[in-house]
Amino acid sequence: EVNGWKIGSNENLSEAYLSGADLTGANLSLSNLSGADLSGSSLLYSNLTGADLSGANLTGADLSHSDLSRANLSGSQLNSANFTRASLSKANLEGCYLSETNFFRANLVGIDFTNAQLADVNFSDSNLSESDFSGADLSNANLEYAGFCEADLSNANLSGAYLGGACLSGANLSGANFSRANLSGARLEGTDL
Image 1 (tube, rainbow, N blue to C red):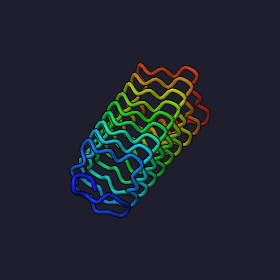
Image 2: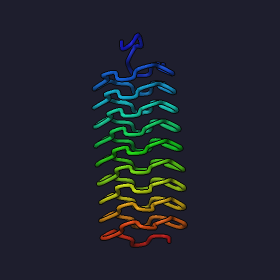
Image 3: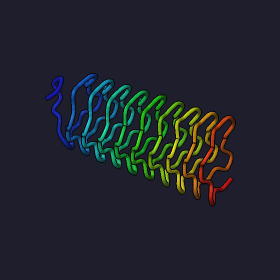
Image 4: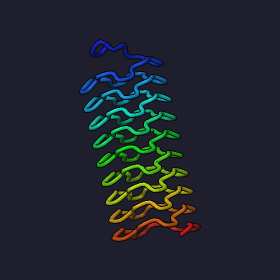
């Protein structure tokens, strides 16, 4: 138990107050954490596979090396959170607030980032293949060596973003804003401009 809440897989932790909690290595797979306050919490090496984190506050939380595959994070506050080497394959991040979030070397294949606020986010060396960034704000983001193969970046704002060495092969870039972006060494084969 943490703050009176039972911690485990398939638990109902909706609206739980777990700010600053140490949940390192916790198994929260399939749990309902919608609207929960996990700001500043440590969730390193945690299993959040299939968890519902919609509307949750994860500001400043550390989710490094955690598994959030197929998790629902729609509408969550993820500003300044750390997802270094985390797996978020097929997770839903639609409409999230992710300013200054760190996704260094994260697995983000097939993610829904539609209309997400991603200004100043670090996606360096991450796999973002087949993800949907349509309408997302990636202004000033660090996208160095990120893999966007077959991703949808239509109408995304990439102004001032650094895409050095990024792979954009087969990506949909129609209507995307690349003003002041650095594309040195980026691979653009088969992109839809």
